[in-house]
Length: 180
Length: 138
Image (tube, rainbow over all chains, first blue to last red; front, side, top):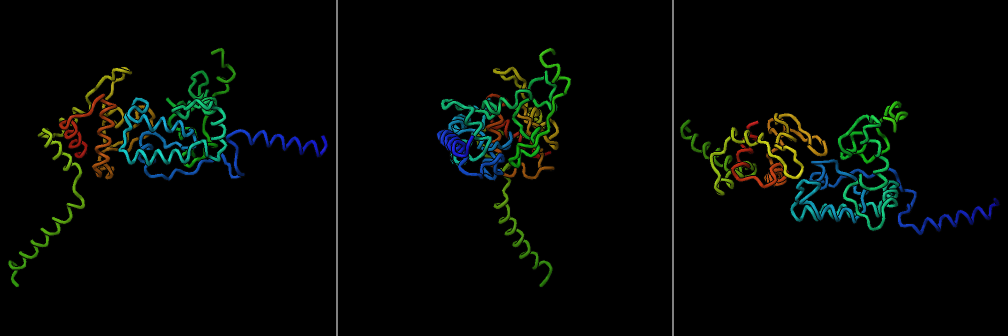
């Protein structure tokens, strides 16, 4: 391949990429999420579960979550109107649609435009990465009941860093998978 | 000035000081108990609160047996665990966690939310008062 065709190839690839919706706008795109500092979000949402980075779900999902707080996964998460609006605004402003984050791009790419999952773990990208965690056949360790508390395995999740994780499946279970 | 004549001004100062301070640090639990009494509740007791705390209620949808201690544990000086998410819940007892029972809005918010989940309904003023008196005593 000569220099010219390579250049054309790169330009074609770039133009193809730029047509998709969620592409890094700069090299600042990162695998880390900014630390969560919104006091209302931390207090009202972070009391019962980890305050998830808003960059994990598209705005259309946060609209659904914030519109159904009366029945929040079977629990009442009712808020006064002002607090609810403030948290809603914060989530929308930082949602995955706009985030310059590689996980956010992957999450958005894994969703159809019509899909607005209520759970981070119901997005195909996150669900796929965690398929083994809840499957006893893999003898995972730790073995959380749900995926709600990221920090059980992602030790630095509170800081917005999901790259470090403490999670294993036994080799034995790995080899025997399907025959167990 | 005799000792007796000093007592007057000192007493006056003390009265002023104590009249000024409580407004800033009015006990939100006392406030709420007054409101609950105005709604017809009476004779709040820690014993009744304790019985209420451990009273099992079967959730009709899931079949789960729920009670306050499920998430908050029976020993309020210890931390509990959220029944669904597993997140640690800091101790409720003000003796080990002074932030508890210090803010009226927070108390009302949690009573509303948690009664709905645990009992499937809002708590009565009597139940809320008994529970608060019990928590405050821990």
